[in-house]
Image (cartoon, rainbow, N blue to C red):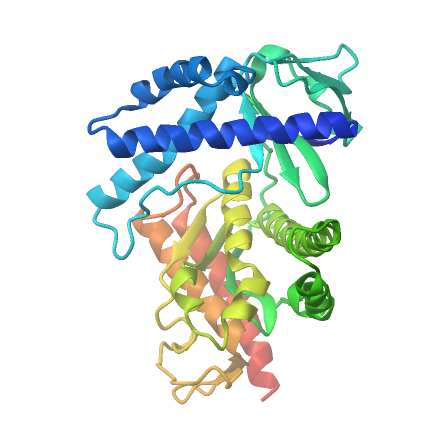
Length: 404
């Protein structure tokens, strides 16, 4: 399933009609959730049937397309099923009991209620919400008109701080022919540098939020000074939301480019399976960890790995920074110590470079034992992989020893 996104342009009346459709979606979702809370044994099919009951009882709900109403009920059932799964799997902590939605920002259509213009640059919504004909503004090289309409399974309108967007969910498979490079890569993410690989290359941490923090604080102060429920407060809130959206997009762009470059240039990728949710409990490092966007980078790394059909292996993070990549000696060091000096063999390496080499070592052991954690990847010849690792690592270590 591929997701294509374009920006929508329309009149103020059309924007108001989209907002009304979004409110109807929230209404149906919350009503479906209330039915589940009050009626024991409610199933997904019961929620689907309940949409027709709501359409008859509330005239404004009947204006939304019937399949869009069913998609709204599906959202409620998704939250319910996730709660059931967490309870069944005995997830520690809160199980995620479904709650009522207060700020819905999207409406989803299935295969009816919309149609594309023959030019492929306009979309028409034909239900009773009277959204009408909207122009698509996006990349013409990746236009949705290149796909048959029957392959478009979902159409979603999303409201963001800078306007409205339409997403097309296309049922198709995308494959990229990977060009073998004979290189395996271990990646250690960090805060001093964005990432360090097993070859000693580092990428500077962009720190998008830190750079924008001064402007965000100023916009937040402006918002707090505005009178509640006033037009000026709405403008100030939109300005603040647009700045947050810009930071989010900058972080996503860097993560996507770095992941694509790493996967395209390697035949195997290894990274630490970090428990980011637990790490951000550290109040000293929480802001920096969120700003680095490790989770976004890892998500794109796995996505591109599946696209290129190469192994992307997650390894346990225990002792990757403390263990010597040359002889295996455990060298205790705090976070402030940025250089690894082994007391056993005397090798001197950057702390993150040493960790990246250890990550790659463990990943190659997983591959040779047939315990690769990433699904949908192809198997590598473990003997070739070990040989490549030895040659690459030994050359780096020789340079490290000569520079002592």
